[in-house]
Amino acid sequence: MRKNQSGNVFVIILVGIALFAALGYTVSRGFRSDSTNNLTKRQADLAAGEILNYAQKISRTVNRLRRNGCSESEISFENSAVADYDFVTRDACRVFGATGAKLIYKAPESSWLASANSGSAGYGSWWFGGTNIITDVGGNTQPGNNELLAVVGYLDQNLCIRINDKLGITNPAGVPPQDGSASVILADAGKYTGTFAGSNAITDTNLDGKSAACFESGGTGPATGTYHFYQVLIER
Image 1 (spheres, helix red, strand yellow):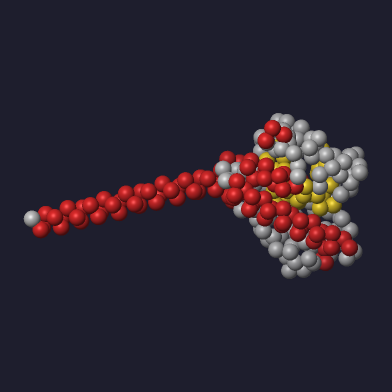
Image 2 (cartoon, rainbow, N blue to C red):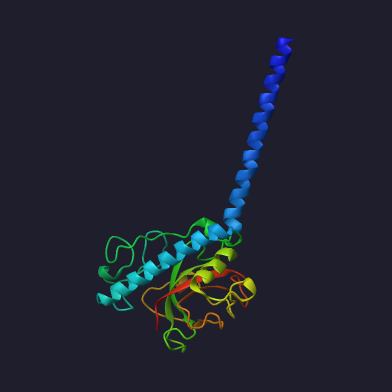
């Protein structure tokens, strides 16, 4: 009798361990899925704060370099994490790295991004470009007066909404403003290397005059229906 009872207890313990392990695996999968594709309000709030703080730090750094005598064509975003920002310039005018401003490049957190877009150009990195115009920023919307932007692309929609909430920007019908075209070029050809090219306007009445905002890319193309945050670094 005692042997049978001991055996039964042993089996019950093994079954309990197996069930506990299965439950732990299911819960961990749920957390991973939630953090990659559907941020909670609390997660989005914390992430929005981090993005805005870092974007403002980059903006202040660029302004400091310009006050120290660097022209806009000398500002360099070359860094060890993302290629194709290098060009000949003075060390004193580098935003990242061991010389110049010595700001540390910090890649976006994977939990901030929509994993469905993971194969897209510019996914998972900060993009710095001079190919876009923001309507009513800098007082001029003419081609050739593009702004210098810092951009994080392919964000989770909840995060994009929360960024705009923090900035006081309207999310019409509860979703981010939609630009009229897929205008942000998050590709190697659009990376800033001292010159401004293109004349793509990021435009929506809720974005006009906003030096920082998050929006949905409209129009047609691979970026349509995706969400992007921009911070103007130099108004032109």
